[in-house]
Image (cartoon, rainbow, N blue to C red):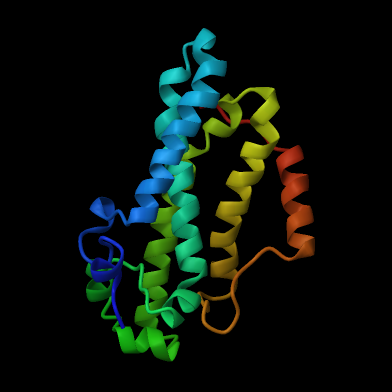
Length: 188
């Protein structure tokens, strides 16, 4: 098994906050570009343009991490581990535990930490869902709800990403659309 620090320039190594795999960096860059090109242009007149790159970066990075945690078992079969080594060590989760799909208390604690940190990124980026122009507001809210909903699905499955991939079923997707349409705006 190869860990990402040896495979994709660099993940199962450093502290979570400093941890950036190639695709996380790409997600962050896309978030910044998306924020600058679409949101800043629409919001400059309101003086909000400077806020959008960090907000979109948080959402895009959160989406990529939620996908990593959702696909933990799939990535293991491909020889990849995107969980930071620092957290695996702190929670005493070994590669063989992951490969065996062992649902230990240590694994639950690790997943709780990963989900909580990722949820923090979504919360940090949430104001963007209310700042974007009307032309993108529904899609932005749907994206935010979809990503944070995957974290809910992981928790609802009691962190068991090994036996069944957490996802939005047909009813779940319908709920996402309803919630995006009925979205309650919060003060930014």
